[in-house]
Each structure stands twice: as structure tokens, then as C-alpha cells.
Image (cartoon, rainbow over all chains, first blue to last red; front, side, top):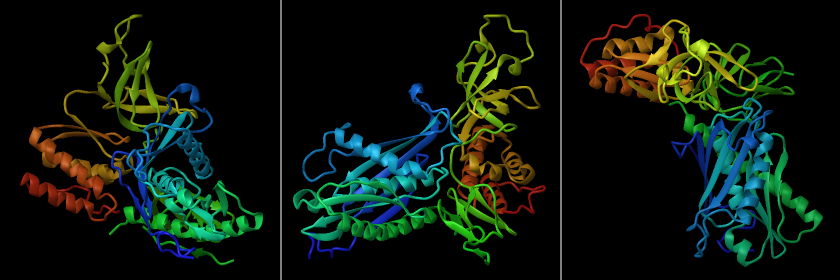
Length: 229
Length: 242
């Protein structure tokens, strides 16, 4: 099967990862897969307001996912929060929380802002991948990084890293997954469409392997930033 | 099982990276043990000393520690003291009895001692488990900072700015004639001739950006000599190790 952008079914889009792209932030990173570009900025740990949200046992992670108005395919994305962005912010938080150790920062908050400057499918995965690098760049204690990628089924065939056209126009089954590589655990698994149990298992196996490629890119980007010549 | 080291000295480790295998290695700060593997917990530079592997953190906010001398900013006046911004996730409280030995009348205006926006050189006396921070002004050299300017550097680079036994900061002081106070939280107070202040600021920024490279003292010395057009004699900083 030939895909809309000429890739083979198990071929990922070209990925790029960079750390330290926003000097004012405590930690920042950029991740792009094909035409999808995500920037993540981490601020904190810092004092948490409103105060009733403070947790005296450990720090709190807050994620905000946002698509910029000009980022989509022609239609302007209405600025401000939406049902969709709120949901994605929540799943991003859940995907990243298992690796973060915030026990040293009671009553404090770590804010992660994810901005999509250009979108072409797989935005939540690009956001999570960028955010994991940004959190590491902020010097926070983490068990591991998180690598995410969107798997899918198109015309009965398994495809990796689905793009915007495949997702929205061709109606592919969309399965975004986030992997914690060292623990071999999945911290994000969503499903939009229909799929059989066996196919899902196969999809996850392939997805994990592809996530490891992203993991490598994340590690290299972090090491590149702090490299000593 | 044989022990296996998977990283070299002074290499950069990222969270989740396996640094060594086998029970023969001992993890230090920033590294955890998972079964027989040593795993990095944060981004940092690896230091290997015999069987001990440590991780030198390069990034992150300032975490208050009892005994640290810091520069803080008065951000609020309380009923019985002052709230200070110590440039971290938590603020500190300077109580009246730790601030001065003067008798202060009940209901007196506390801003005559420390007003909003004042910078002070202070010392952390206690940090609780919930990160409530107490500071004191009682101690040699602790005072309100008048005039001068405040610079900000990464708090993890402060040891390099100070240098071995203070050699680096002494050198900048000698070269520029500025008064310099370095807080452990990465705030630096500078006071001197405007032109010399600029040179000192440039030198400190240079130290911050090149903190991880060796031979720093010599480079900063050359830089200062070029800028001030004076010869600098360094005391005690010659055998500085990275």
C-alpha cells in the first residue's frame, strides 16, 4: 500500500528533536514528526497558586496542550481552551506523571506548556515526546523519558505514525501510545475507531519498537545540548 | 555476575539511562539502583571515583539548604517579620528576632528596617520537610545590600563562580575593584565603578557559560587582563581542578 505522503506502512515520518529552544523557560524542547511541530516549555518547580490546589505530600504536574490558531489545515483554530485541548492536557499529564518524582517539592507546581505551531496528525504524541525532554532539561528527577507515537489501521492494514490526512480524511483507526522504555510500560493508550483484540496486540508490539527510535532521538538531543567539546 | 561500566567519566547522562551493571558499583546522588543496574535520575555530568558513580546536576531551580548564604529580596512585610524571595519554589521568612537586636515597639513600621524590594545577604538557618525556610541576619557580613546591581546565574554554576577557596571571585574583585557577593542561590551582587561593573558582569557570564570546561581560571584571567589592561596575579587559584 502506498500512503498519501509516499511512505511505506511501517515507515515513520522524519523526526527532529531539539532541547533548550526557549531560553526563558526552566526547561524546553522541540519535537517534530514530518509536518507536526510541538514546542514544550517547563516552568518550575515553583509556588503553586491557587493555594487550594497545593498538595503537601508532593509537587503537582500541570500540563497545557494548545494548538496555535494558524497551525491547522486552512481552518483557523479558535484560540483558548476547548473540550479537546482539555482532554489532551489531561492525558498528557497522566502519560508523564509515572516517570516524574516530585516528592522533593511539596506544595509546589511544575507547569508544562505544549504549543503546536504546525499540525499534521499525531499532535498529542509529539507534545508528550517534547514535554518529556523539556522536563528532563528542567533538571527534574525522572525514572525515564516518555516516547509517544500514533499507530493506526488504514484499509485493513497496519500503519505507523499516521498523518493528518490519514486520520481525518481517510478515517484511519487511530491508536496513540506512549511508552516508558526502561520499564516497558505504556502510559498512554487511546483508540479512535474499530479494531480487533489480536490486531491491537500486534499494533502495540510494532508501536513499542517504533517508540524506541523516538527514545534514541530524545536521548541524543538531550546529550547534544550539554555536550562538552 | 561481572560488573560492567556503560558510561565514561564526564559524559552526559539522561534520565533512565543505564550507567552500570553489577553490584560492584555504588550509586551516589542523582543515581538510583534498579535490581543490579544503576540508572540516572536526571540530566547531568557523570563523575566516576573508583566504584562510586555520581551525577553532577547541571540544571534546575535552587533548592534551599540550611547553612547556605544567599541573596534574597524582600517581597512582603508580615506581622512579625518579612517574607523573602530566595529564587526557588519556596519563599523564606525572616523573623524580627533574627533580623535585628533592636527593640521594636509593637505595631512599629517594619519597613524602616527592610522595605519592599530591598536585597539582603542572609543565611538559611532551617528548612523543614514541608520546605518552610527560616533565615537570619545575625552573622558575620550578613546585611542589607545598598546600591550596586544584581546578576542572576544558574545556581548549579555558583561553585565555579566562587572558585576553589574563592579564587575566582577574588580574581574578579582584584581586577575590577568591585565589591562582589555571591549567593548560593545564584544571585550575585556587584558594586563598583560602572565600567568595571560591566567587565565583572561579562566575566561572570563567561564563567557561567563555560563552567563545564577545564582551564577556566586561566581563560578568565586572560579575559580580565585584556579588558582591564592590567596584569593580574592570582593567589591560590593556580592548581584549580575541574
